[in-house]
Amino acid sequence: MVIRKFFGVILVIELIVNVFRVADGLSMQYYLISCPFAEQIVRNTVTRALQADPTLAAGLVRMHFHDCFIEGCDGSVLIDSTKQNTAEKDSPANLSLRGYEVIDKAKEELEKQCPGVVSCADILAMAARDAVFWAGGPVYDIPKGRKDGKRSKIEDTINLPSPFFNASQLINMFGQHGFSAQEMVALSGAHTLGVARCSSFKSRLSSVDPNLDSDFAKTLSKTCSAGDNAEQPFDATRNNFDNLYFNALQGKNGVLTSDQTLYASPQTNRIVNGYAFNQAMFFFDFQRAMLKMSLLDVKEGSKGEVRQNCHKIN
Ligand code: HEM
Image 1 (tube, rainbow, N blue to C red):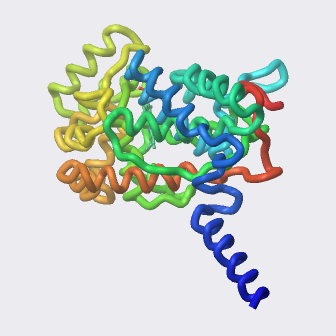
Image 2: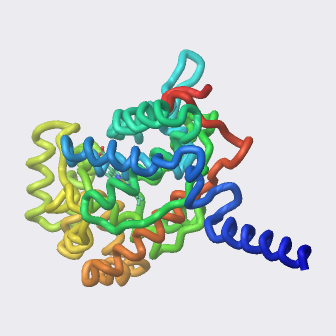
Image 3: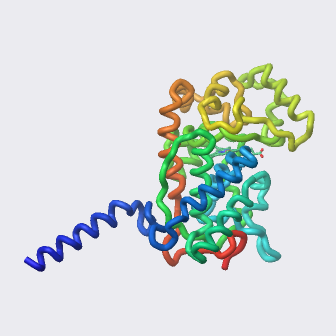
């Protein structure tokens, strides 16, 4: 009888633990005991930062993507270069990343509450999630427990997608990370937030592009008349998370070659039309794909560390 009860209790405990466990070592309630207010601290920091500067939502979402695609979601994008090592953040593909100070602020608050517990990789994943929601996008929960990596090398950023890619190249690159074409298009919908600089699209303006609306080409040229760093919003509502990006693609108003190709290519055209027509479907697919992205090659347990300072390895 006693033995039966004992095994019963063990079974219940195992069940509870498994409910919260998503991938080995990661769980929804990872900080429940060690830092119970971790989620709130990140959310409050992000909210305060975005109230002061709503454009940072885009910066945080993009930074999380660039973190996860290189060496997995391990905070490697946050590491500073040293005399011996040029880090990811100094790659041309990362020079326009924004929002580092938001991660630093959250880390500072977390170190006060629970020193040495919450990884920079988790902070970035939570901050991106909170930024999407703050901008009006879908709400989603992510497992925590990512450890911070110890490698950040400029040469690894060759594996970030180029704005000059066509749909096949994008499908191929995202496929290498386990994403379907539909998931790739959904993730590209993050371009509902933010801007691109002229240098990322000016090559489209030197010849007639049948996939670029002629009036919109004039808009882009006007933007570029202010120089390579002049910013062009991806859609009409740069700080709102909505499906206008996909409507823009239907009107041949995509800013990057890699945006417009999603509409031009028969491989992805149907998906763009679906998201342009049905925002709820876009939101649903986006949050699922973001959750999947947040789990890319995560480092668990002794495979990584919890950095004291997000800018450098311990
Ligand atoms: C599909 C392949 C992708 C390519 C080729 C691409 C490329 C780019 C480029 C070139 C820029 C502008 C950079 C600049 O000119 O300064 C940009 C901005 C941005 N990207 Fe992507 N991106 C892709 C996918 C994604 C994904 C998957 C996400 C997030 C889930 C994302 C989030 C963003 C955001 C939010 C911005 C605006 C950043 C800001 O305003 O600071 N992108 N992207």
